Image (cartoon, rainbow, N blue to C red; front, side):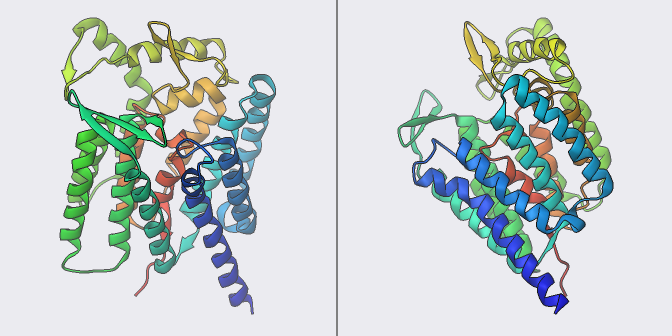
Length: 363
């Protein structure tokens, strides 16, 4: 009886997780938001993940985790009261809960396979729904009349690549597995290259390098990447002042991030503990503004404050995923965090966090 209840609980959890991952795509296909994010989808996903978390509380949450969640809840609530950053606060809450669920609950190969196949199908439909024209060496992309950033296009192809790779990896041993890996990486890599999304190109290359090594120290590599994510913005600004304009892949190496990071840092200095929310827009120069810090660590610190930033970094080092392929893919995502707000972007952050889902070792 107890075993049946356990199996039933796991199936319910799996169904809610599957729904939370595909519902943003479904809402997008139905025209409920422009791409993959809206307030209604953020709320819907947060509710589903909370139900999963409560249902599996003893498996996912230690006393330390619960204390961390309580402390963060206080700071996030203060942020909402002073900065009215409802969306970003709820999205960060979902990220932490999703991390606990995806990384600490063990799913069957069948469940993982269905999730990977479903996500892959949703991303494929979305990508091939884009209207793309090429001019002057660049891609001009629209989706239902709305312009899509070419970096977003490249990152979505990266998400598709990783989900297909992990889908193949979950299907068991086969002499054709390495060939399938090569086909998927090569096919996805072609579109990523055409997008000229340098962060996605760099991440895929980094993943391929990790893919070739069986013996590697995840924590040491992660530590170096996290340190780079925190200190590189300062180095980048100094490089700009020393080198001036330099082009990489036909695009300026200094394409404005130095201005964005300087502007973000000014906000951090003014509100280092509680953050300043999203209402205070970040300067891009020439009178233009953005809500993206183009660096996950600076983005969290600027919008939510110091405690959520420390929490984000803390959970990066708690990964104990059974599948090495998932850890390698996620590690390359952490690398992107140096240049993008990848793991806090509500459009696709949970798709990348789901790479950490544990698969039961089956004979």
